[in-house]
Image (cartoon, rainbow, N blue to C red; front, side, top):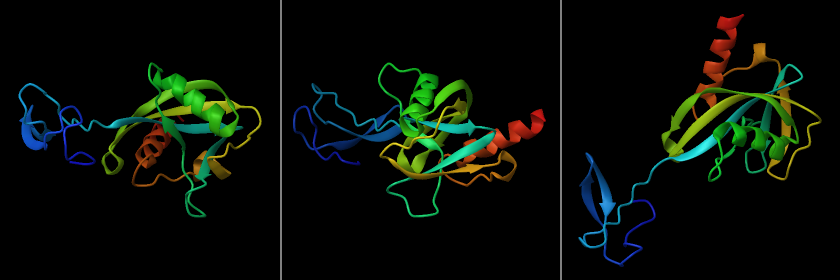
Length: 164
């Protein structure tokens, strides 16, 4: 029961209840009906292609030498493809000229659903305050990692190789 011990509506102590085949924290008061669904959070990831190379960025909170894709949260009433273009603009200062879905990837460790896109972008890279540095990687030298956005990179690389 991450974060909840008491019902935020009526204050009752939450109990485990079977809801649709899964046990979830729920309010025992029949009149309340509160359930902690704990659904995954939608996160956008962008495999940014810039001048023929892939942009990997390092978040200011990450250790040195740790780089990844541009990511961000999907906003209310925002289409995922629009969110991918927005995140590329906000974090890298680039303009997206093409945004294509790579796939959907559950990331259980962070309770997220990653919606990954290949984004072709142009302009001049200007990092926002979230990013410390970036690297440009030739797609032929890009290697996928085993967690988070890595499976999206793996699938994008496989699709790219199959199309060649």
